[in-house]
Image 1 (spheres, rainbow, N blue to C red):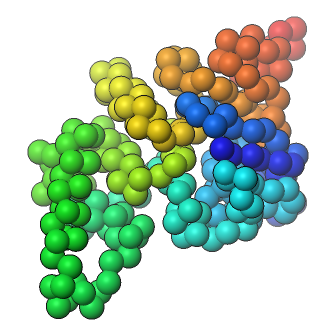
Image 2 (cartoon, helix red, strand yellow; image 1 turned 30 degrees about the vertical axis):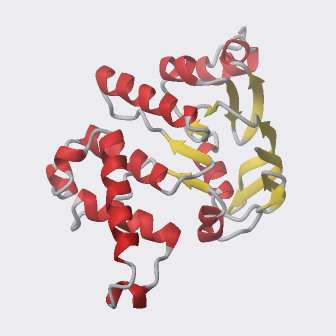
Length: 250
């Protein structure tokens, strides 16, 4: 599904990523873990075209996408969420959802203005309602983000990412800031999305959340891969223990 080969990224002489290499399984849920500053979000930005690597390559479904613009990556079937919510505050949740949809399908402006595609917009509206219902935000649909609880906004962003019908979904710290009940609800939604045939790669610090979901785990530290495998295998890796605990005798 996703092949990361020898990725290197530097910012002002600082090596954010060095020789990052791993192959994500064709199916299931994968996780990218590591201490703060390990390079996890930088790697997400490389995959999604926000950062161009100094060296290495990214392949998606066997196709080279290194250096693609973010719009090209999105149109190719990769969608993502962000650490910081990427929602326009002046618009309602429903309006924000429409923007995410339009960005993928790009309906004809002329046909819209002349009402030649009313059937298309009717079907689109139905899809948006179904998606908002799927992530349990329907009752907040006509409210602006500032009036909506944080946990609901996290669910909304997940729904908007799924709205584009991606083949690969990248989740950047989806459980951050959520309480236990909200995390359990999120985990159920992630499983449902995966059951729809969507491959998922997530960055997450909550190890309990990871252990309940991930089939494959990659651990980064100081911009390098130090372990990859099942959660149990990675958890017992001595390099991973040192990275998280700073235990020289681990």
